[in-house]
Each structure stands twice: as C-alpha cells, then as structure tokens.
Image 1: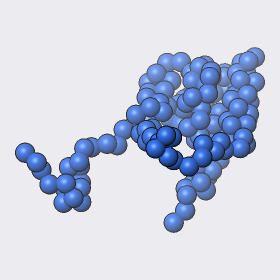
Image 2: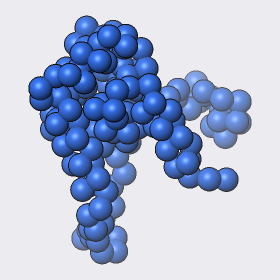
Image 3: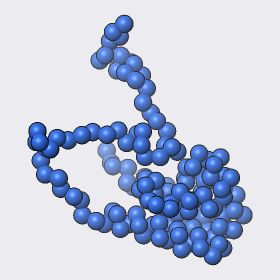
Length: 146
C-alpha cells in the first residue's frame, strides 16, 4: 500500500502537459488542497476562465482539464496571471517546508479535538458521508434503532 503521493504527482504532471508552461504552477497547485485556504488562490484560478470556473464548481483540476485551449493560452499571456500562479505555488511550497508545530501530549487540560475536514476544505470537494447505514458492513456494526 502507498500513500498515493506518486499517483498525485503523476496526475499533476499530466495536467502540466496540458497547460501552457506559464500556467504549470497552477496545474501542480491544483492537486494540493492547500490552494483552497491560500488567500487569492481561488481568484487566480477563476481568472483563467471565470465562466468555466463556475461551471466546474470552482474545482481547479476540472477547470484546467476542461478549459478550452484558447482560454488557457489567453490566460498564459495575461500580464499578471503567470506571476500570481508562481506566487501561489511558492506559498504552497513554503507551507510544506515549515516545521510542524508540536502542541505536546493530550491531557485533560489540553484535550485533542477532531474536526472533519470533509465539510470545511472547499465546496468543490464532494462529501462522501452517508450516515451509519451507508454500507452493508456499517449496517452490521450499527443495527437500526428504530
């Protein structure tokens, strides 16, 4: 079993091949969810083709996959967009390079909380929750109570 990192890198490399070189940083950034909380990232992707961005549900992978070649070329020639794309990729790389913070061990005074990111990363990410009876295995573990 792998972490999937190689699959993501392969998919990002394939997307890089589809876009003009000036937009390659966006193709790589699209496969890292950090884009979704990086200030200005959504606006940078939207600048490629605002109408297509909306049609794609603000999903950058779909945008770069489905945008017409003419729109991608036009975006690559934009005076500011390639610089914004490079800045977004640099911000993600900087975030990845910073050391992890240590909060110390969990104690009654400093408990650990779990937050389901599934609901809070970005609207373009599908939600896979289905409740407790979503699969036969789940049904066996949690029998109906009503």
